[in-house]
Length: 459
Image 1 (cartoon, rainbow, N blue to C red):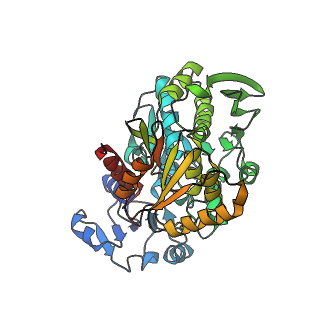
Image 2 (image 1 turned 30 degrees about the vertical axis):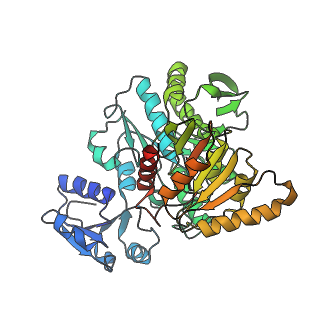
Image 3 (image 1 turned 90 degrees about the vertical axis):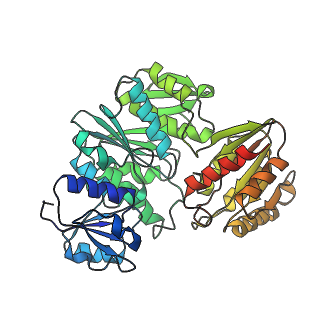
């Protein structure tokens, strides 16, 4: 790509705007914004062309380079035709990783990316590295990385949260690749699970012998990724010992190198709620040790970092009832993990829009968790969830203990009000939807904000 290249930016959201800002700053002048939203025309800078409306992806083969935003599918026919005809297909993430002179730590996984990235960031800062000078954080929980590309120097560290959408067109892998859990998310976006896994493997296939991969050994797909590793391989596990990496044993977190283990901290001292968060802590421990962060600094961060908004976020306690916001839980697996985080009497609020997930295991978890006594369903997917619960009841038969109360409500406000009404002193009300938010809200953040607002109005 040179200054005279004809460039198309597909999608003019946060990432598309960041790409445009970077390119214009660096004197790229032949730029066209392609977006379905015709209303953005008046907001475009002078000299920038536009292809707007329903046919915004027509004619992509006339460009030299395409920057694809994550929300636009890599395998869209318009993009693939352009690629076959010699057009370079890139993205903000791909461009950043290719151009960045610093050390890149990439984190991907179905869930937990933001928490893991932030833990690493906090551990490196605790060791003395300065934010936005020595270490940078990019992704949904930080800035779009292209915004700080010009600031990054050779020895600087960049931590990137990378979704499967961003990985499909990577031409270069991060120096440190962390693969967290891989489950059923985004099957509404990808053609099938094979395409989803293929996107994730881009984290590894462009690495070399000097790179490092950190893989969660507890998931069956670790066997799929492990043979692709070309450099150092570190495992993490909450189920038992690993020779190189981090693991949980005897209610403590350990780090191991060449079979020699050292204790970092007790599990009970972690500030994050939920056993599933150990899966996010362990990779952060491995990376921190790779950068020679002291055990005491690692333990301090584990003991003080309480998590990100909308991830089992504690909202308030009212008359002995605690409210938790897990709006970022958009798949059954993370909702199941949230339910497992509490042994107090629990009311679960779940539901939203359908991403094509299967709810059979989720339903079994709901019905067999002794402390969960009420589930309140909302949204487009409520019928599917209720059917899964009824089928699970029939499957369990006499093995089912005390019946779980199943309620249906039309709005989140009604669900919060009735969740509180059904709760017990010393108990918990948790919204962990196990579904996307797009049927009722703009995104999971809007859903989470509304939940918090309704909870704070309770008296």
